[in-house]
Image 1 (cartoon, helix red, strand yellow):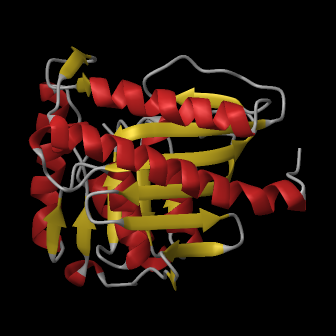
Image 2 (cartoon, one colour):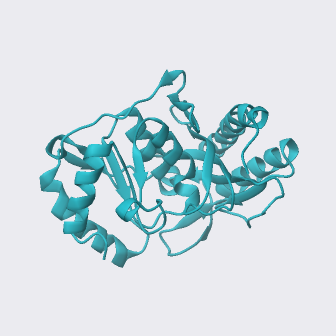
Length: 272
C-alpha cells in the first residue's frame, strides 16, 4: 500500500495536534502528583495512571479522526485496523523521568504503513513532544525533520569528538552488561549521555545535541517516531549490519560516524 498524497498531507497536522493535547494532559497530571499504577517487566519498570489516561486520550482522538486505522500503544492492546496504517504510540516516553519530575519525557506518536513491526513497517510521519519545555519535533517521510519551524540536520563528527547517547534496560543484569560496553566506549569518544527517553535521544541526534545514539532492548513505540525524525535529519538509523532497527539493536548517527561506532560497539561485545 502507498499512502495517498491527500492522506499523507493530513497525517502530520493530526498527529501533531493529538501529541500536543496529550502532552498537555500528561503535564497537568504531573503537576497534580504522580501515582504509580503498576510495575511491568521489573519493579523499576513502572507505569503511572497518567500513562494510561494519556494513551486513552490519544486512542480516542485517533479513533474519532481515523476510525479505520490501526493502533499499537505501550499501555493497551493492539488493534490491526483496515486502512493499512497503524499509529504507534508511547503516551509518556521516559516514565521514570516523569515520575521523578525530570524535564526529559515525551509523547511519541508515529504513523506507519504495514504491520506494526519495525522490521517491516514504513514510517510515514512522526511527532515527539516534550511538554515540559514546549519542544515539538516533527518529520514526514521524504519531507524532512523539524524542531518547531527549524529544519534539522545531523552533525557529523569523528569518533574522539563524538558525544554519544545511550540507554539502559530495566533488568539489573542487562544494565551490568550495558555498563560494561559503556566502560569500553567512554575512553574513545568525547563523552556519554544517558537521557532516559529514547524518543528525545533520537531527536537529539537530529538536532545535533548529540552526535549519535545507540541502545538495545527498545520497544517499537520507543523509537517509531524518533527514528523517523533522526532519519529525515540525515542520520542512518539501523540495526546490526544494516538490518532494520529493532529490539535487538538501534544505532542512529551520521553515516561515517555510524559505521565507526558500530565497529567499536561490536569490538566491545555489545552484540552478546
